[in-house]
Image (cartoon, rainbow, N blue to C red; front, side, top):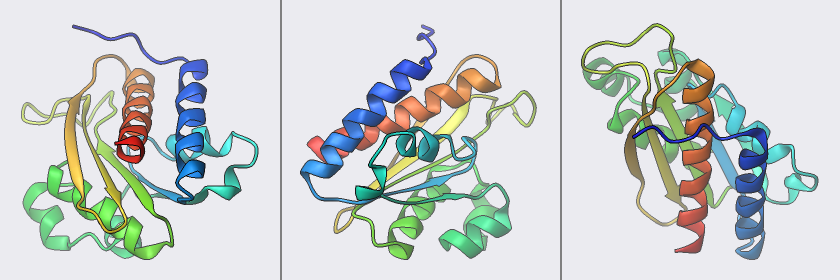
Length: 168
């Protein structure tokens, strides 16, 4: 079943929910993004006053950037590739370790239109979340549509996961 692609208004509403939840818990948030290219950070920092609860956003497309900026182990990337549960977990843990935030979200995937394989087709996205003091967890998504649709769905799923992590 194909879900509707989130609109700008949908993403803004999700970002507002994240803002409310983060402020209520007095937590700062950090993002580590690959396939979304900073779109999660943009959605969050489009909100006035976001500096009160948004700490940093890191965009890491290359293996080298994931290693240098987030501490992803080169062996993980060699063994499982950038689009994997292991990489998403290391990205989110690395982001949280490097910044003073209380909550992190990380995304890595194949937005297309090229780059997919039979094992990891276009639309394959891993999203990881972690709260300081807690365990990292990641979820695999398979989104439909063109590059923008995949990226919009990824941003929405990432923000929904942050809301869930902050309110559970």
